[in-house]
Image (tube, rainbow, N blue to C red; front, side):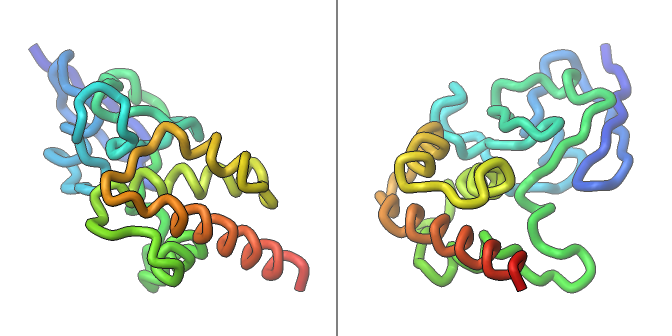
Length: 162
């Protein structure tokens, strides 16, 4: 038994044929070839599968695809400019600060950092740590990740002032 769902994916209206048990990561990968959200722990504990649904972070490995019918979904692939492929300020800061090592967890951290800076443009270190606490980095790049978020916040602030 399948059903068709329609939703906005990274700014584009799309549809997919799904089964009731398909999770969001499966549909993003199989139907749209979007590999940024990755299933790692399968329990919603690591953040590798982070996707934004209607502006809220969800664990794509646990989130049933049927729930995005009519919703707005953003993946890490939406962060770079689609026309020019220019990276977002958060992506640039992660590269500059060396905030990733193997890169497996990076998409989830990028989305969470983006969401954090949209909600709190000038976060302190405690806010950053709290906001990113649901994302795990097995390579232990936490100091670099914190530095990258601070760098992105400073750049966003400088760009909005001038």
